[in-house]
Image 1 (spheres, rainbow, N blue to C red):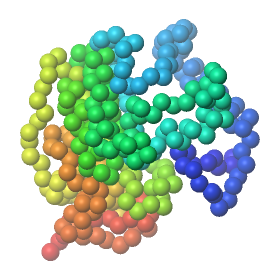
Image 2 (image 1 turned 90 degrees about the horizontal axis):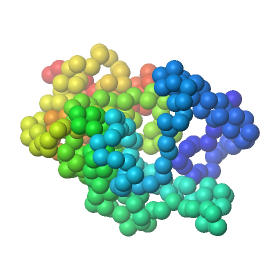
Image 3 (image 1 turned 60 degrees about the vertical axis):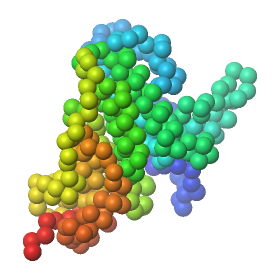
Length: 293
């Protein structure tokens, strides 16, 4: 099977493989049919009638009644990393958007950090906070929201934290998502994050104040390295440690104030950076260990 293009990226490849669009479309249809078949035993033969897809801003879910949703899974825009509406522009032009009967993405409420749109971290944070407020409104009491997110910038993470707290959602647990297969940017760009942070939040019957416990990043990193497997492994790489540190700070209610480059400096100054990895799961990265002196 020929490899496909890099999603979310405009580029000129060194080697271009032509893909049959009819075969690609057929594979996608088969995938959707299999998903529908898997859903029927759980939901009954009329399960597809329960499905609703809507296209409005997450800052205004007025079509959804209060406290009517059991669970929310959200994978929001990662700050300044991907400009979704700009990437859609060529597709929308090809599909006749902007003409009679066609529509282009309204960028007004797109939650991104974008110079061309005049949106900084402040505007991004306000849009995300409005979306979290709507999620809190439509969630039933004592139900859950799962947020999958990561960013190298501390101010973007702080905006996410403020939005979650302002909405009245409480962080109950944090995990690290290892997608195993690295993206093109993660392989080629130094400093690209490699692991997403999964934040599980619960809607409580009454508003709560965020925790005020003080967690020290250096101690968290020391504990993570002490509990990691011995020898070269992905658990000892800067990308993994940054994701775990971010998750631990969120879980303890502490504000995130360190960018990825700050975490790198903390690792270099306080721990032992050992060789370049030879193992395929984290090639080209240093791995860190506690100092023995």
